[in-house]
Image 1 (spheres, rainbow, N blue to C red):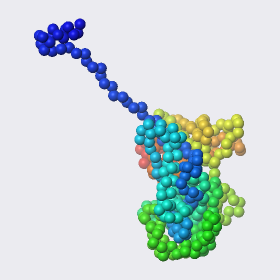
Image 2 (image 1 turned 180 degrees about the vertical axis):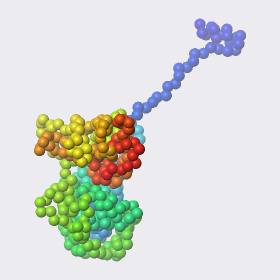
Image 3 (image 1 turned 30 degrees about the vertical axis):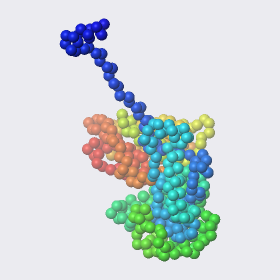
Length: 456
């Protein structure tokens, strides 16, 4: 019928009728699943170390900042078998798949993202070692103290040297390195951050312990002890690092000041008197043997035992949702204990709110309604402290909600969360989670007009 109609219409008008084509629908690719903010990727040891790793028995110096790691790596680099380059920061190298097909292809090879990152890290270290012509690599990036578990998983045969220094001397040196960037009090808290991480690694990993104070007073003895630990012969040439051309000192990748550039080991600063040790550093100083602690209580506290490590904070829809992982908590026997989130008004332990916390493996999750934190008659400004708890009475276990297992400094200024409003009588109260100067998670309540007030 349409053909006959077109013939007649064509003779009369020169036009024809045609069916309209179906509209073209652009194929949309399904979005890749988003990675949950703050969620740490899973990692695992190599399935076949002989195939997956090129580096054999790498050596990692686990140490805080400003503790003599650059001096130690310069001395170790003088050995005919040890290559100790500047800080490499390989754990900051990440692998991202550009397409879903790439993800599927790697899955077929049984390679997850962290496996690929480990292959990359290993190749970078191996390349550096091959270029040096030596056979043992030494890596001294201070931030490795925050990733010791992953480093040990990446290289199961890795060896660790723990380099300690008086925590108060670390803080003083850190402050003097750039007084315009930090106050002495801030330097002490940053020193605490690094020393805690180093102490965690020292307690969980086998290794060899040396001290900065011994390195600067008797470097030969320290170097001999490290060589014995590594199973290599001591070489006197290690002490003459100032006569070698290798060992560049690029700014930002280790100490590059005049003292280290002098080319000779210099006496360290005098140890501080006990009264001069900042209060935040007293426990860790005792744990490391720089302060007397007959009872051992300070050492146990400084070991930074069990805690509720926060990974995500979501203030929205009238709730503050908190996600994290239990750290240092032994696996529970059946039946598993019930955990709660205890929210306590600072200075008023009798003002406590409890909320159920769900636990999947070592991952916990709990939510707090913001309206509960701004009851009528509460004195403002107010602060609430958060703990994960289980048990009751004298047998209650309380773990502070904190974030101390990463290397992010000054979280109080960097990790800023939005406030939510609660109407109370004629006022509007702002409820806002925040990290304290000690990296603990708390919740502040204050009038909207006083939002600029900072609670410590």
